[in-house]
Length: 440
Ligand code: S3P
Image (cartoon, rainbow, N blue to C red):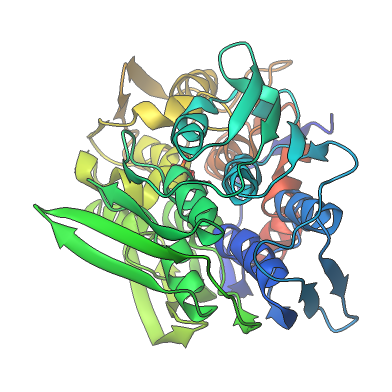
């Protein structure tokens, strides 16, 4: 467990690039593995979560190689041609790999076992087990519907229409991916829009996907059995990774940083709007499209932040960014209130209670509610920092580690965190980039 103390920082300046989008990287590997022939992927995130997906797709029969120039080549065998894995699929810390692959395998005629680390093994899988069972797959899960679990796919599976009971792109994607190898039309009704990378990318890979609206709800239909064609995928920078540098630049006096090539898909960009609502100076430059996704370079300057009431309707478009938004709120003037964040309790850690504890340890004034945090900001005064011989518990959660690292940059005595290792699941270059930005 590599512990680390993050100290008061010099201004963050210069131009940086964050690694590829995690959600898009998982999907690029999965869909390329289902397309008959050679696909290439540029800008793939080489974090542990995505590498777990790559390893699983290899076990399922895809050939996946990384070229010396960083381009990944994937040779897929076609939808319906995956092979039964000989060993358990080790999903590490990655909920996205697990839930999307459960969907993918639910309509293949074989069994597979999924395992994961202590964090992933505590996370709810019933949310995907339920719709996939309706499609004909069967499951033997650990108590409470958790990993390790065994899935037996159905061939043929039956198409369903499934209304999402929770706003979850992972559940939506699991059902749509099961629909790929299911004869007929599989439908998902989304009362609240979640990230739409699956729909966009499956269309790009040649699947027939229809998006409609019914009574204000989104209706997504996929036609099976689909025939995916190999593609060249360019992965834009991950807005969820960029968020740590946005907040760092906003709270460290004198900062002026440009983060290039950041994905600005509306279903992901909530953090930019929330930070602007708090008075953050974030300029979108050079707006363009990369790999079918809107992208911009973001210039972020130190700003006097103000507390805000964050609209719960924005939660799905910034669901992974709340831990770092809480850090921005801690340095703002006045009170920030967040609600409607029940889903944060079932992420890599319970991000409401773990962040409440971590921020309090670092000297912040925070009240924990059932569905969010209320934060009384310092008005820009540095946080005290963690007491001597005490460290923030990161609980195998990369976003807790990075958020509290950012808090440390605006603290008097520094913020110690118990374990930086989880950062490698999504952002292996985080520590190096932070050092570069604070020295430029
Ligand atoms: C993801 C969806 C979100 C998000 C996760 C990635 C995806 O999870 O938190 O980091 O790639 O589909 P939920 O679907 O559970 O909200």
